[in-house]
Length: 167
Length: 295
Ligand SMILES: Cc1cc2nc3c(=O)[nH]c(=O)nc-3n(C[C@H](O)[C@H](O)[C@H](O)COP(=O)(O)OP(=O)(O)OC[C@H]3O[C@@H](n4cnc5c(N)ncnc54)[C@H](O)[C@@H]3O)c2cc1C
Ligand code: FES
Image (cartoon, rainbow over the protein chains, first blue to last red):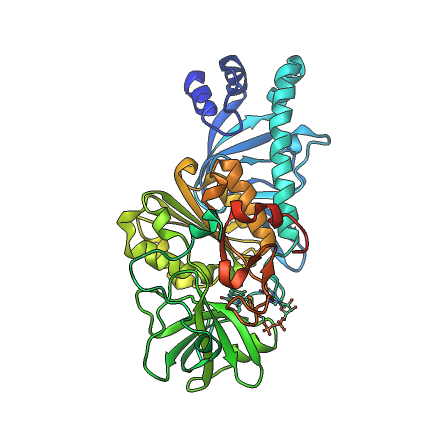
C-alpha cells in the first residue's frame, strides 16, 4: 500500500486528527495495516513493547493473567482507540496482555521508528506526547471510576456460573 | 417552577396521571403480586395487578411508593411499558429491609401502591432529535419505559442509542430484552461491564467511556441518564465534552422519600423537592448543586 492512503487514514483517527500533512506522512512511514482473528494476542505481558496499535475495526481486551483466576479483562478498546503506551517508556516491555476478542483490523506502528522520528523532531515528539498524555489521563479517570465500584453489590463482582431464575 | 423544570412536566393532551387529592395520594391501593422474575442475584421484577381491576396509568420516568405491609414504604420507578399499564411492573434491587422484603414476595401476596408520582422523561421535547440513554446498574429500570415509548413511536426520533453499564456480566438487567433490542436496525445498544472474568466476550469499562464513540450527533441530541450520582456526574462531563448542550441533558435523581407529594421535605434537593419537581431534572437546572458533595 502506498503511504498516501495510509496518511489519509491516519488523519481520520482521533489520535492524529488535525496534524499537518507532513507529520502524518512521517508517522505513516512507521505504520502498517494488520489483522487479528478472534482470540489472537496483539502482545503479551513481559514481551518487548516494540509496536503500538490503533484499532480500525473490532475490539481488543486488555487482560492480566491472575494465577488461580485465569485471564481477567480490565478494559476493552474499540474503533479509533490506541492500544499500548509502554513503547514510550523504558524498559519498553508490555505490562499486560492485549487480545482481539473478535476479528480486529488495526494500524500497527513501529515503536523504534516513531521514537527515532520524535527524537529528531522534538516538536512532533511534544505533539504526540500531549496526545498520548490526554489518552493516559482519560484512561486513569475511567479506571478510578471503575475502582469506585459504582453500582455496589454484596457479591464478588465476577463469580462464575451464576444465573437468574424464575420464581 | 423554573422554565427549565417546566420542560419535563407532562404536557400531552391526555390527563396527567398524578395524585388527585390530598387524601388519595396518601392512601395505598392494594395490588396483588402476579409474578416475580429474578433479573440477577439481587434484582427482581415484580408484576402487580390492581385488586380493584383499575390499571395504574403512568408516564415514562414516574415512580410509585410501594408499601410492604408492616415493614415500610419505598420509592420505586415504574419499569414497564406505558402503553400496557397492566400489570404494573417494577424492578427492584434488594438493598435494605423494605426492598429485600419486596423482592421476597410470592405470587398472590399483596402490596400497597401509591402513585404515580413525579415528572416524566422529556420525550416530546426529544422528538425530531437523536436520543442517547445512559444507564448505570439499576438505572436501566427507570429508563425502560422511555425505551418502550421511543420504540413505539420510533419514527418521531432520530438515532436512538442506549449505553448501558453494569457491575459485572452477572449484574446485567433485562438481558434478553437487551439482546432483542440489539438485533434491531433502528436502535444502537452498547453494553459494558466494570469487571469480567475471561469468559465474558463483551466490552469492559465504565459506561461513560462509551459516550465518545456512540453514534449520535451531539449538536442535535437529547440525553437521558439514570444511575448512581457519580456515574451521572461523569456521564454529564463526557456528554458536554462531546458537545451535547447542557440544557438537553436530563438526569433522574434519587433521595429518600416519605410523603412523595411535596409535604414532608424528606426529598429536598437544594431548592427542589425531588418527588414534586423531579425525579427528572434538566442538568442545567441542578448544575449548581449537582457538584456539591452533600445536598
Ligand atoms: C424516585 C426514586 C426512584 C427509585 N427507583 C428505584 C427502582 O426503580 N428500583 C430500585 O431498586 N430502587 C429504586 N429507588 C431506590 C429505592 O427507593 C431505595 O433502594 C429504597 O428506598 C431502599 O429502602 P430499603 O428500606 O430497602 O433500604 P434502606 O434500609 O433504606 O437502605 C439499605 C442500604 O441501601 C442503601 N440505599 C438506600 N437507598 C439506596 C439507593 N437509592 N441506591 C443505592 N443504595 C441505596 C442505604 O444507604 C443502605 O446502605 C428509587 C428511589 C427514588 C427516590
Ligand atoms: S417526599 Fe415528602 S416532600 Fe418529597
